[in-house]
Amino acid sequence: FIDLPVIEHQKQPTFTSETMNTIVEKAYGQDQILYALLAGTGLRVGEAFGLEVKHLSADCRTITVEQSCWGKSIQTPKTKSAYRQIDVCTELAKLLKQFIGHRQSGLIFANGAGGPLSQTNVIRRSLHPILEELGVEKTGFHAMRRFRTTWLRKQRTPEDLIRFWLGHAKSSVT
Figure 1: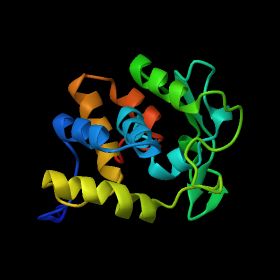
Figure 2: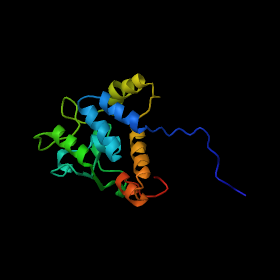
Figure 3: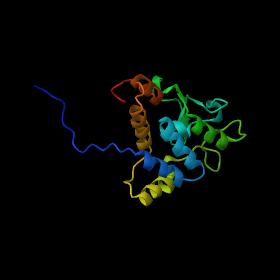
Figure 4: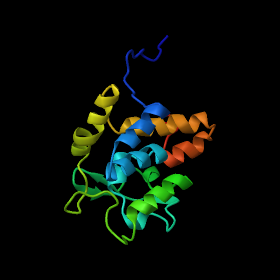
C-alpha cells in the first residue's frame, strides 16, 4: 500500500484578522494601501506591483489582472487562469480611488522614479519592521494572500469563486 508522505512542520504562514488590521494601521503611504489591497483581494504581490490605473474600473470596484511584475520587469501572467477580474469591496474601492486621485495612467504602486517597486525593499523597510513590532514571525506577502483565502472560506464563499479570484487553474492549488 502506497500512501502520500507525511510532511511535518510545513510552514504556511497566514495572519489573523486582528494582525492584518494592525499591519494596515501601522503602515503608511502607499504601503498601507498595498497591504489593504493584498489582504482584501488576494492578489499576488507581483500582480499588485504590475497594476496600472487602466486596470481599475472607474469606481475602483473591479480590478483586471493582465500583467505582473517580476524583478523590475512588467510581464504577462504566468498562467491563463491568472488573467481575471477581481471584485473589490466598497470600502477598499473608496480607499483605492482616493489614493489614485486624478492620475490617469501609470503604475498604482511606484518607486520615486515611477518604476515598479522592489518586493525586497518593501519587505525590509516596511513589512518586517511592523511584524517585529507586533511580535509576529517574519513572513512575506503570500501570508496576506492566504489570509484572503481563509477569510473567504469563513464567509462560505464558493470554492470556484475563490479559485477564480485567486487565479488558480486547479482546485488542488487553492
